[in-house]
Length: 210
Length: 210
DNA sequence: TAGATTGTTAATCGATTAACAATC
DNA sequence: TAGATTGTTAATCGATTAACAATC
Image (cartoon, rainbow over all chains, first blue to last red; front, side, top):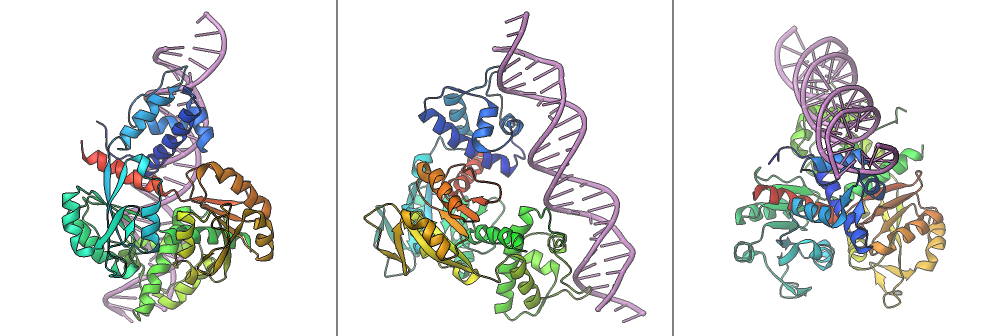
């Protein structure tokens, strides 16, 4: 499999295409062209075809793509044809919002554990999952076969929590804290800094105000 | 001012540099080199200098940058030297998490209004801000001088809400819904799709599992 | 002055776009 | 067959990196 060096931007677009295709399925559309997908998600049709070409040939020349088939292929490519178990570290505002957010569940993700250090909230539940003390992290990761860690702790604690996650065997980390984290390079790290996004808006707003 | 075509990636890095500089200020560091910043945030020193060069000359050859000065300049560049008023549409899980999250407040953002359509939650408060009916949107945007709208409604409502926001005079939109939104091109739109980030992890995890 | 580090130019790398032959 | 649309190659564009003269 020609797997090497898929641009990150391509993977993100695949995720967006898949969401759009799901919409088309709900609407009962059976066939779609690269041009229609492109229009639907706001990119060029060449982009769509190029992105797909990294992974194979999914369409029929002169016809387009069968919506259901392409959707199935994308789910497989994105690894959404299986379930991934998630552990959330930090059950504060951000962490509990993430835990309560339903958007991931139908896409292959299960929240299997939630940890915190605050005695006052340990023992309470978020959407049926009990908040447990951080000490149980290693045990839960192992016994529940958890591969993804989500970091929603305050910045100063972020690196320590990361080290714990890595040591416990987690393979990928989604970091919501505004800290640059060090991880071994076989661990996949993704930073989702909400502030950066707001500040980007601020930059462009300020730009227009001159 | 040579303002045209700053890469988005550059702006995001500036935001990250600024966060790192703030850390240095807290630690009492007075001078820093591009190499140190680079090491601190995980990019190359050339990258740091290039990013800054879009906006002027901030350092001293042979010496480096004065931390406080550079921090101040970055805040100005990012538009964080003033306050931006925000309206949140949708006070569900995601919306209330966003409202309760403190991370933005000290960076120039004020949550000035929160709207929803659900009678059951209208009237209650999130962090001192009352949840109000969507009908008051136009009025609040005008009277509170709101420039940024945050969309945290379910996907099917996202475009309608966007249209309302645009009509009300909001200049920038942060979209958390997994929908591709149409906006006039003088409105700044930023999509923060949490699912896309998780699915990116899933992709790389699946890649390693073959 | 000697050493250090910036600001900037040129070279490299990678991603997007345009174009078109293949083919349904 | 004629029209449409894919898959792919080549051209373009833009961003990152390397290198170094300027200068503190």
